[in-house]
Image (tube, rainbow, N blue to C red; front, top):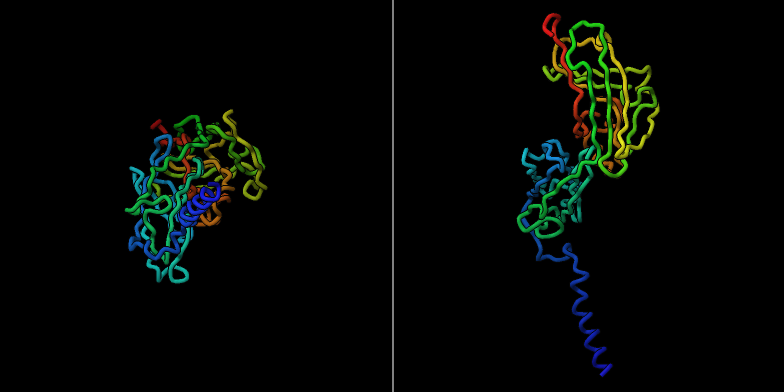
Length: 289
């Protein structure tokens, strides 16, 4: 009886074994002429997903969702891919600096999408909706929010940064007042005007970067900037403080896809998808306040 039982047990294992070791890349019957990958991604706090950086590794393809979060990729022809067509498992990454990183798995054989494998269904669509949780809140208060052109008065700045749950690390110039030592000032009234980079602390752009940890208990920084030093004409402006949200878990190739100088006080820093609140103020002509 024992010998009979053992025989059937071994037979059952042998029948199951091929299923456990099945490799879709070795199955010539699994193929697809589909080149389009689509899906949907949203932000956990209901902000518009239009600035989410959606990146497909291996192919180095980038796209951004529409207002409803829908996105799509079109794979290049296999003849335009390395080695005449890539084969393997690749990740689609969903990146926002102030939200948690997420990804989905895509399988490709000889440069063509394998549908109904990984996180892709039979129609080439992502099986599940992606929702990115917020991890860091950023708020900059500017007072007063309206000032007179050519005034010698100052703008008072209060920067508040807090994590939503887990600790988040940030990096900023080792100069007082920290993240407020370098400011990017955008003209919202006339976007053709160049962004002004203002250094409130001498040699801040050449200073080493200091690392700080942010928890659910907010951190605050304060500073004052004179309007004469800013030298701005009338218009509506936004101030963006320079600090880098740690992204050690983000693939280096994804970051390079955005820009190689995104961690530096250059205009590429503004290309990093981030939601910030506040920071706006208006300059009016004398007598119009």
